[in-house]
Length: 89
Image (tube, rainbow, N blue to C red; front, top):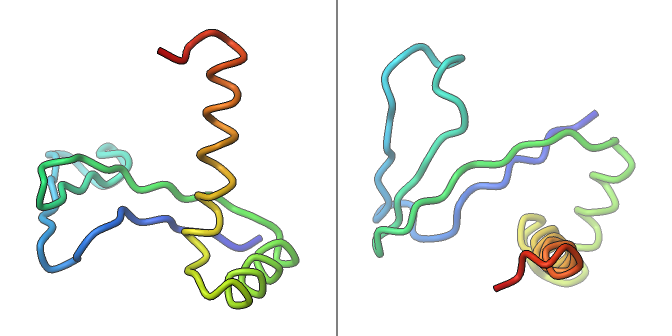
C-alpha cells in the first residue's frame, strides 16, 4: 500500500501552522491556516500500488498534481452524498 498525503492549498511561505499541545500521537491531523485565515486539515490515506501508479499517470497526462486530480472526484462525490441525504443547505 502507498500513502497519499493531501496537503492544504496555498503558498507555503504565507501559511503558518497551528500546533496543539501533547505528543504527536495525541494531536491528531495537522491544521494549517492560510493567509486568508481559512483553516485546513491534512488528509492521508492508503491506496494500492496499482491505483497510486494510475493516479500519477492520469495526473501527468492531465498536467495537474495528483492531489488536484483526487479532489476533482472527491468533492463532487461528497456533495452528491450530502444532497441525497438532505444535508445540502
